[in-house]
Length: 421
Image 1 (tube, rainbow, N blue to C red):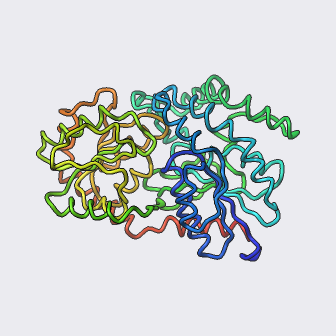
Image 2: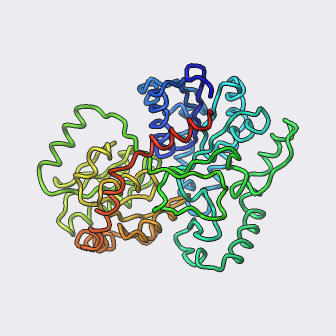
Image 3: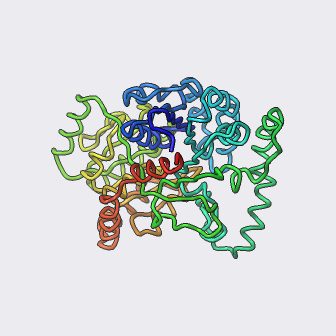
């Protein structure tokens, strides 16, 4: 085993808060365990990373982050992946490879999200040890329990396995590989590496170690997953917020009944209709509400007294003091709601959100709505059911108890340490 004081760990991930914060939690714990930890990600996260006394390495400018999230198509169910590929994932392949190149491969372990293609290439060319980390179950495809990528295609997972495999191969050729393989293989050619195919189904997974940061009751291990996959419990991380904001939260929470939280996620800035419906739904139900977004332009003016707007809310501390959450279906928010033991109403848009929404409904801890058809009356109707169903309440309590005993960060770090032996 490499001595800890001579072991460097580079964590790297691409995306929004939900993609970065789990890596922050893992990085903080690895530092406590004695490792020299760096995180390579967008400049947008520099401050919060350095607040944890971790080394920050820039992988993309803050301006790039805002350029991407301002593109409305990023939240379109069929156009989103192309935007993510062309404006984020593919342009970062070479910069990430070059960052990794500066580390000594004999004493460095790379821990990378599945979409950090430059790390996977560096493993093959430069022989680094690599642990692939999947925050969301949807990146582990299976012909058995098949992930759901579009809320309107609920029929697809029900097809016979042979049909799903055939359709998967066709979609790889016509969609996924077509979108990613040219750029990836062009860079591989520069490095004298052989071309690859089946990018998402096979290649993104490290042949050394793959960690899924979600429990087996959320997505049971499948026989056609890579054999290297190990699952943990969910990983939770909350950043600190300003004391004045904490006082505002405490004052509101103690002033009346438990409120409903409404959020479209940290990266979504086109949720004006969602928040307008949220306000009306609260009025229909005579409930208090918290509207949560970093983009104030989405919030209706002249909010009623029973509803407040916040830029940030530490879910680990405060979500258990609310009665329900209406959200986009990001895996981080989904997991925090499960930990808090509150029902969820999900309005999924793109990426892994539809898959998480379906899993929540199957667990009996919430429901989902088609975001294109959502309005205040439908939102209020579904919330009324969720808030008054004893069956939903029992399921929420069941899974909250499971997670209260969990330690996803500790489990992930133990798997990572085993790779150093």
